Image 1: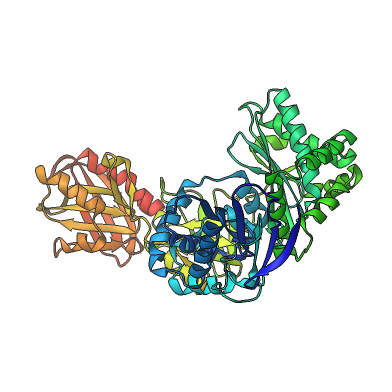
Image 2: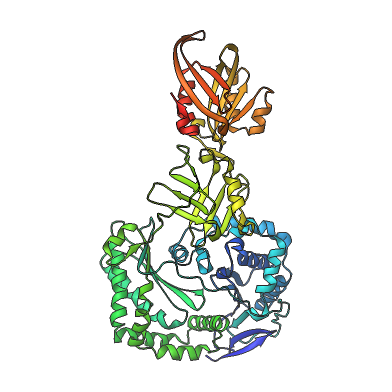
Length: 623
């Protein structure tokens, strides 16, 4: 194979001589912009540009093409006849310069559907734990930008990131005469964000409910460590399968930006064997870091490379690798020159490469495996640090633990020993939903979801968070759910604020004036009017699902009592009243001294009062 560097309309390009690769023409246009160049606020924007650029192609038959985004690049590729490949890249270049943003809303919906289909992978968990919500760590986070990106933002990104100076192209043969990229936006290479600091240091296990085990290290982005990791994969497959502990062991090398790469081994395992798989992987890497591969392993690899160097798959991989090194590292070596450096590697040089990165080992798997690994720790989700501020107690069945919101930040914890704290000056992003939910995300990836209706007195929580968070850090997350499933509605959905309804009670002293009390997470509705018989079911459904304004508007006498105006609620049993035997009195004392007394005449009414008023008021309810 003879490969040469050249240029196509201002884009650096690499191609081989005619006949070096048999079959159809393979070509790839790679831009140095990927997930690591995004932020949480625009997460997914490269994916959006890729989809918009490809949409104009429709579904042409007769050749293969696609695009993809990884941590450091966005790539467009095609395989087919010379005219087909030339037409494909001409269309991509034209579309990148003039994106069809009238299609933006539809593509955002398509991408959100695609995102829901992707499950959490070990690689995503690994990157998220190492880098948080920055750089390549964004692979482990949702594409939040899909909920808020607008046309101007997407067009600006395309014109600054998908430019001639930020791209490289490779082809498996000479460029077709009609191949043109001159419609691409003209611009220099982009300035990439500074590589994020590694958050997980030392030998750490990230707890995950999975039978699979992954083990990774962080290395330089050069190919030097790849061969010894492939030896580790081969040894692990032979040893673990031989012991009937695993069926498959996979190896994934991934550039993550800033001259770094993550090298990940992942093995499946029997349900009762994750610890043995974990120990096996660690032992194998340890052996290689101490002694290096055997002479037979090194000789076998060199022989394999020599035998397959003229195979089309090897040539295509070599072209892609050389193009990426030129684009991301400024390395102008041809595939032949890179292969010569690889062949010069020895067992000792490979050993030294691996030994230098062993301190960066990180494992994803069941927490219990850490007990079997000497010197390993479990990634700490919790701390004891907490901000000072107003303390909110949970509404039973809705939340747990305590929430603290203060001038410096917000803390949540399930008990007094464990806390998650995010300080306002350390907020990376805040997801805001129209229904009032807020999710505060710290720079290290800590997350605190705040649903105001789940906390006593929480009606001001949305405002408090919005006042404290920099508006530029907010990410609009859509409308959000305003109803939730509830066991008391035969599988139906109710308003998120609803706790319970006391239907058909009676005002004390006004036996003909029936009323209902709707207990919400932030107060009580007093609804007048008779509700009985066939009308009762409809009334209960309305009380569970109607919004505040609709409930108040149904009768001019209706009123709303915020929980902040309630001093105390007392439930007292009366042996005999004018309402009949076994009657109960529910008294609502307001902070201004006003008292409302209500008769409860059924066991169901008493049950709702006993259950739901304590959830709303805590110690302010007594019986």
